[in-house]
Length: 263
Length: 263
Image (cartoon, one colour):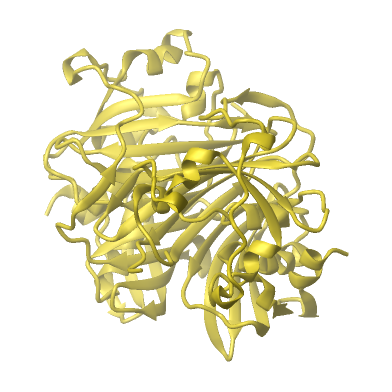
């Protein structure tokens, strides 16, 4: 069991209740990373499901939970032969922090009938950049959990040279060696710095809603995260991330709607 | 009040309960169109919200409701200053048919900080094609509610010439003159024939999950629907639709995960 597996562990209390312990090691300057929270919640959903994989997750981020004990409450909405549907709520102090609708199914080695190409070609990983280590006082413990290697222009904002468009692209793997699985993908779809940094914005950009779909089980090795936005307007922006595995397959797709930071 | 406004009307029973009457005029060969069902559900959510617009809707389609009376049950998850979050369930015969998480907010004339371009240029509406009228026995009443004018290659499948990739593009407006509003957009994001028809698939393609975001209030006139998919695999496919208004603004974005038809 890796540290990530342990940090996302969901212990069954009864068929619709699981205990989780939110790990301070996934903090983004205080708030815990949304992908980490989804991964913990999905452990409970999958454990209680007749199916193996979380193929679709739509999460609303209501409030910012604190590290420490929390509970996942499930409501089984439908258990079908192909797919099951579950509502899952992350609860702390009797208050809902995340509300999610999850479809589980069992993905197989099914045929690919049609596949698109990656929208952008990435340079080789050796030509990509790691971000500087955050200062301890910034409480960015999240960044120690994973390795990101960025397509250089998309982190130009660090040196005061944003590309001028919402985009962020990086190779991704866990710091502690671990083959990617659906829970790692839940983390991956929310692991990039907000795409709006590349368009000149700053500050914490709270996710309001994030929906992601698991499209195939990932091969071992680096994942590639291709992130972009389509519109920054009226304080809102969208962020789409495609996750490709080392075998060249699209394994996850996400879109989140978030608020521009005021920082 | 237009026929569409009437068909999506939600009558308040109490603060968390609304009655709707599902109209047989939105049938796709029997099942009612998912966008129509979302529009009815959103009427209830918006009526009960302190905010004016459904900015984010994530819906799981659990079962196929029948035309006739139904109920929308709301649970208020959060009422914030910027946004409110609501869970909404469409119920018939004490059974949940659609479960949705909705964020409402009030969109203003806020500044556009950055906007992408449409991914594909459409030919002028005069060069686009209407689909042939469906046979009465097909029970495709939905198609009488709206006018679609298709980018010709994306309906080549009708003449046995699919483009070979999942795509569908059309101009859209209601048959009964009506300026587009957020409820019309809920219909618009699910109004195209499944994008997989253009990749050679056939048959009813049930939506499992659909998330869409309202990004701006649409200008009067034709809407442009740009639909595509990224992967058809293992019986599942994704469909992304961007809705652009007549003033050239991106007004809605959706993605659905659906099952391939067996037809």
